[in-house]
Image (cartoon, rainbow, N blue to C red; front, side, top):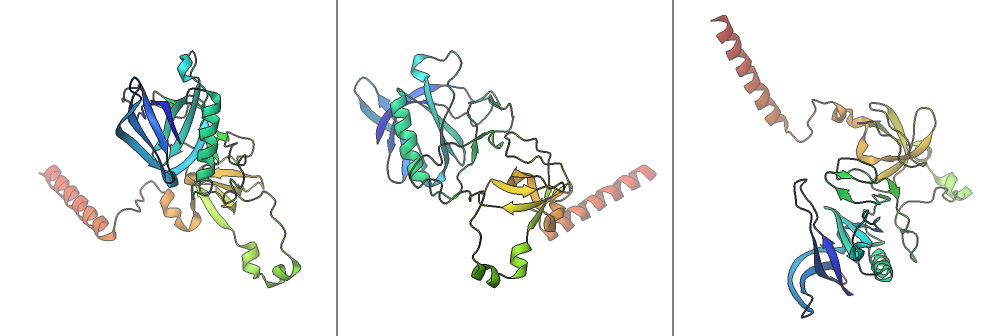
Length: 275
């Protein structure tokens, strides 16, 4: 597939300028690439970038800008591991065609999103939910994941899975039926959708399902169930991770070296003070 879209700059830094340029997009079997494009000669120029299909996590519409120009009324986003790529189609039909095709191509990707941001990232925040972290969890459920034949079959499990047959249940070890992962909340999380579960820092939760990489279904101590962002919790066996002084990236030898250096520094301060 080939199409000329208007591409918005990706603003990888908060101070990055915001601009819009026409690019020729080409969708192949393995990636979507975009090139410079001479509209007068209708000729492709140099390659400006590409995204491997396996890196794409979500393809969704975006609400158009308030009072935006006529040629930017049909935006959509290609969300990958480095953030969203915003493009503007010339018609609704073209936008829907590309969203559908990309959705079919990525439906078996390992890390598809269940939630996304329906509005643009602008000036250091999401205009839909005002979160200031670009990697913040989405605030709207992805609604196209189940609109394609076979889409989403490798993703989130059914809310109500089939019960095991009597033979399967008899063969199941007792520990397998009661074993649950217990996690501790690293941060507070206020719900953004009715099926979410709020988190309170340092409180324990039981994980019930991990069908999606980013959103787990869990139960709180009061028995309420819902979905929680997986990056907001840590397993109780790793409780050190939610201590502010803990750094899992440092080796023991490096930690000992830093402690010795600090001991020497404090000793020198004490000597200087006594003098």
